[in-house]
Image (cartoon, rainbow, N blue to C red; front, side):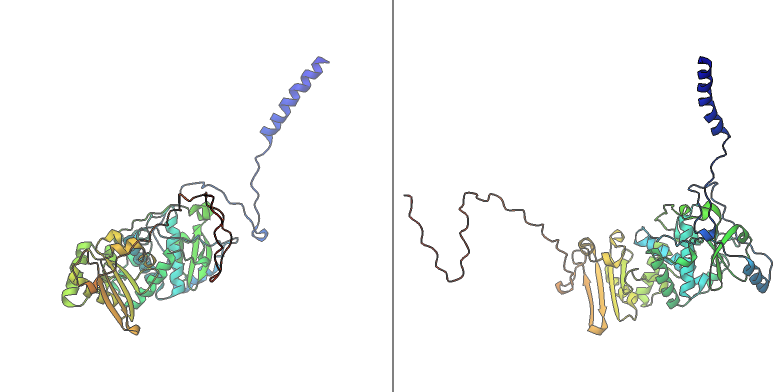
Length: 410
């Protein structure tokens, strides 16, 4: 009997162990697109894929269109990207805005829908670890080469073709909105696109997810094309791009910009690229560092910046570090106290006025700014309240006779 018990005890331990070793591993459930779900890996299986220079198959445009039409769109969800909000200071935001504006303008022309799609791809790349950590770095990646840049306008000489200022203004609005959280949902997490009359070699390794007019949009297959791959913390410092100097004051070297602004004051004519751009949250407000100009030149620079606008607010600070990131912050007490000069224009109301910080610049009192006075702190609660007073006996109306005092105890 003891022997039987021993055998049973051994079997009770050994059989489950054998089953555990021999049972195949459980695979995650996979659902077809018709079932509406598909399991997604939570971690990457390999390093980020390489970013390859653009090379095209030798096909005529009509043959390329026919080839592209035969490539199916991937099934399954195409989620919209998360909103992106640029966190850098005003100078870096301006450089980022102008880099993104150049990308949307030279890639999509003066077409708002196409521009928004291009902007979304740039920001998707910005969040992906396969690409540079700055907006300008993404846009101008590979531009040092004559071929193989990521956005062809950066290395094929297209920047020598100047667009009208009105085109730049519209492109900057699209760029500023994208950097402030605007999302173009149709292209999802696309990191690549091309027109339908070319076929790049990288196309066969990516998932085709969307079409916007004549442009086709792609994302990487596998984990690197899922939302989890786009969670990198991006940088807040944007490099100056020399190629954008003719179109952007923010991308000029400070000494070059100072010379151009000085020349503009002397001649009364400023190059458009030497003038600042409006705030991203208010198209008639300009937030301007004034460290490169002497105070006597501020009024001429303000009038040149406002141009022919009917309404305009030019707000300037001698200390560049004091310039607020957007117009909504310009009226905070700290920003107002640090402000050096303002030029306000409203021709409809007959207003055109210059105001100065007279603690910095000597001017007549009528031209001086009012200093922002902080609100007084709330009064402290009353103390030393007597508790030995008798309770109130009631409220008398006006004209009522006060009751006669009672007899004294004395």
